[in-house]
Amino acid sequence: MGRHLALGSPPLAGAGSSGRRCLDHARGDRRRQPGNPARSDGHPARQAPTGQGRRRPVKAARETATLDRLSGGRLTLGVGLGSDRSGNELSITGEELDDRRRAGMLDEALEILTAAWSGEPVHHRGEHYTVDGMRFLPRPVQRPGVPVWVGGYPGKRKPLRRAVRFQGFFPVDLEHPDQLAEIVAEIASVRKEIGRDATEPFDVVAALPVGTDPAPYASAGATWWMAEFPWDGVSVDQVRGVIRDGPAPSQNR
Image 1 (cartoon, rainbow, N blue to C red):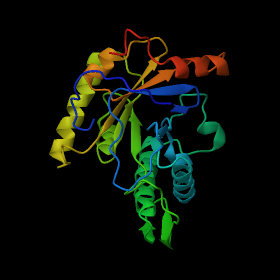
Image 2: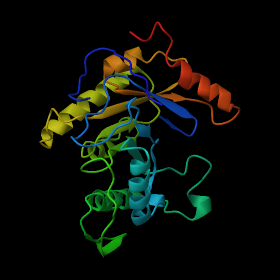
Image 3: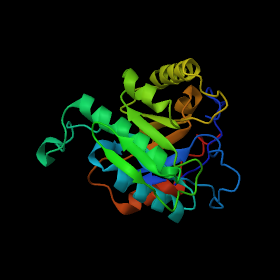
């Protein structure tokens, strides 16, 4: 669920819900390619970052195309390395534990997904995955494909450099707006370094507990606010209430 918050001017040019989180847009809606249908309220369907290395890219390509078509071109895919810190989820399910190998799996998966969304035959032979001339149809509604947000911890340069190749960055465990401002400045610097078009839209997400004023984070460069809830003891009615009410009136300025 997205709600527009007209907060400040964007430091970066161009700069829903998932699980127990809901999202509020901190500025304008994503620019759309001509001919891409959008729901009349303009609310994108968002997904919080998940460990893409745990998903087969061929399966993810089919799923994301389907979701984008069902939502009328409103899907954004959130990806990251994943972590064994939360309940030892990787170790107890036999997943890859080495961060570098999962990073390689993620990069290969993103390469396959990008190629699959084009609708052209995909030819990929890498260390982790092989796709030999497979074509993925129908394509997603959005062109050239589904926007991707990459998650990563502040201060970790590799996730950020991965993110600037796509459409957004989702810093994990933000502590204060100044930290976000530093991230936004680094994103702008890296995008310039690799020659990305400065007018190309790029989102920066601030995940904050319910009741936190998102305005300082929007001023620091956040384009989306994700309202965070505790992982247990939260009712559906509480989540719906936050979606319905959005930020307090004093914050919506």
